[in-house]
Length: 554
Image (cartoon, rainbow, N blue to C red):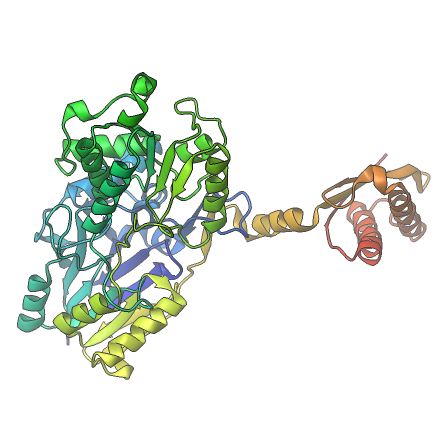
C-alpha cells in the first residue's frame, strides 16, 4: 500500500490572491506559492492580506522547501513573511526568483532563503517528491506548471496559464509534455487555474496588445505618452519599448518596482532593448513632446504609486499637462475599480487624455478562458480534478466544465481555503480542515487582527464618541460635568444641546453606580457610562458609533 499524499489549501480558493498550498508525503511538506491579496474596500488601513501561516509555523520542522510557480505577487508576495518563521530553499525560474528576491531583500531576510534556479523542463528532487517544471505562458515570463511525482502518482498543478500561440518571447505552454505524462504515467490529480472559467472562447494573444500600442503611438505623434502596467508584466513593457522605438521615442521608467524589474529583465535577457532607447526621468523635459514615452507603475490606482502622484499633481519627476496621453494597460483587479477610476478622474482634470481597456484593446488577460481550460483537461485526462485559483463562482464554473469534458462528477472536488485532501490507493477524500483565515498587514505590523479591523470599520462608518468623567472615590460623587468628545458622529458646534444631554445622562448613570457602592470598581463605572451613553446615542441619532468611556478616579 503506497504512502498517501495530503494537500492543504491555505489561500487562493474563494478569492483572487493569497495563493498558497501544501503538498505532503512521508511526513514532509513542500509549499507551493505564498502570495498576497490586495485589501478590499471594507478593510480600512490595511496594506496587504496574507494567508494564515499558522499551519506552516506549527509544522516548521517538516517543511522542506517553497516552490514558486511564477513571479506575480499574489503567488510570491508573502514569501518574506513566511521566511521569518522558516529558513528553507526556494525554487523557481531565474526571473521569478529575481522578482521575489526584491521583497525578501527589502525585509532584510535574504539570509533566510537559499534561492535555487530551475530551467524549463527540469525535474528536481524536492523533499519527498520529484518536481517537474513545465513551461506555461502567462502575463509574466517564465511561469511553470508543476508536476509532483508522488507515491500516489502524478499531481499536476497548472499554475496561472493561457494557451498563447504567438507569445512575445516564443515560449509556448508545453502541452506536449503534459500529454506525454498523461499517456505514459497518467495524471492522478489535476489542479487548474479557474480565473476565467466563466468566459467562453480563448484569451487573445499578448501580441495583439503590441499592435494596438503601435497604432496609438502613431496616431498621437507630437504628444507625450505615459503607459502604466504591472511592473512584472515584462512582455507588456517589451511591447511598449518596441512601439516607442518604431515611432522615434525614448523610454523612461517611473516607479521603483518598474525600474528594478526592467533592470532585472534586461540583465537576464528577458527584455530586449538597446541602451540608447532609455533616458533618465530627470532628463525627460529636455526631449520634445513627441519623443517622450514614460513606462509607469500605478495601473491599480495604488495611493502612492507613480500614476496616482501624477494624477494628484504631486509627482516630483513628471507633471502631467494638457495634451498628454495616459494609457492604462491593465484591467482593475476586483476591488480596485474605485481607486482606478479616481486616478483616471485626476488625470483627466489635468487635461490629459486617458486610454483604457474599455476603449481600446490595450490589455489582455494572462489566464485561459473556457476553450483553453477544456484543452488542458482533454490533454491531461485526469483521474481526479480540483479547480483552484479564483473566487468561488469561478471554481464552480470550472467544476462544471470538467464534468462536461468527461471527468465523473464524483471525481470533481470543490475546495475552499482551509480544506485538506488525502490522495491514497482508494482515491481522493477530505481530511481535517486547518486554520486558513485572513492575516492583515498594516505597514510593518503583521496580523492586526479581526478585532482591530472591526473597530476601524465602526470608526469609518459611524464615528467615535469619547466621554471623560472624574469621580471622587472617597466622597462617592462625580466631579464636574463629564466632557463629551466626538469625531465622525455629530458636528459639535451644531449639536450643543445633544452633547449637554449626553453629559447629563452619563453623570446620572455614574451617580447611580456610586450610590450602589461601585466607587472602587473602575470597570463597573466605565460599563455604566458606556451603556447610558450608547442608549442615548441610539435613540437620538439611530447610529452606533464607537463609545469610549474614560473614567478617572481621584
